[in-house]
Image (cartoon, rainbow, N blue to C red; front, side, top):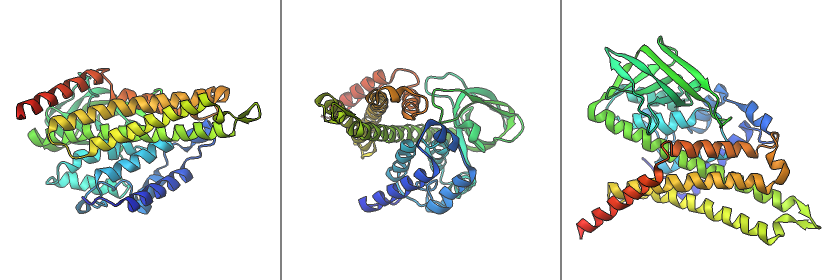
Length: 364
């Protein structure tokens, strides 16, 4: 993988942002929801910009950049509240397939994703969910109550009976029901497999490695999205308090408003720093896990807090349906729940910190 220098990263950010500004009209809630998912734009995103292949190896048809570059794209997608299946396809499925470089089927799927010809979702239980799928004779059975972006997927990378398999969404025995969730800009679905034919991609240790890569990829992508959501919500708040006048001057000049905006900026920068630290090389797996756990909490809480404050700083208009501030609030809340589906992330962070401390003490 090749890492870009700062100038090239900034260029990637600017190109991605311009493309998304053209793809999504952010004027009102109605215009944002009307954008939806456009298959032709998904293809153009791959052929014109190569965004789906950012972190896919060159051997598989991608650009071969690093994780940091891919997360930069996720941040911009969060900022724009992009409604397409980028999180499921690139955030989850790509890391899992990338962890299987010797599997021809994985390379083939990666090539289709990089070319914009395939959308995908990872069909595995959310953390803390006891739901399981079974694989017998090449057939998958079971039901997952909530799969991210399932209604938009051409196929599913499925974790079943210790194996990782691929199932075409349009194949026999697969049904997807769209769920109504708090986030109006991201589609979720209930997926049912009834003896659905599937192709085994990996089994045993290789499948476990790929599954871990899927979960880590999903977590990092959600954290990056939270940074993007928080950044855009802060921009909206600052622009409003600069232009809204009371008593003959902008309300942003009032000390109380200044202090609130300053706190929002501090929280945003803390989330950015937590993500950067989670990506930095760690001395041990325990340290890496502690950093990731901290970033999950920090980014999720920062995005929700800033999106909530954005509504309040806008006053009455912030609470209206027409004004899109609530869409950022909804995405922030949804991402926060996905990052902490069990409600036990703080306990997990404490456990990882204690494990790291014990590891460091034993090394002395």
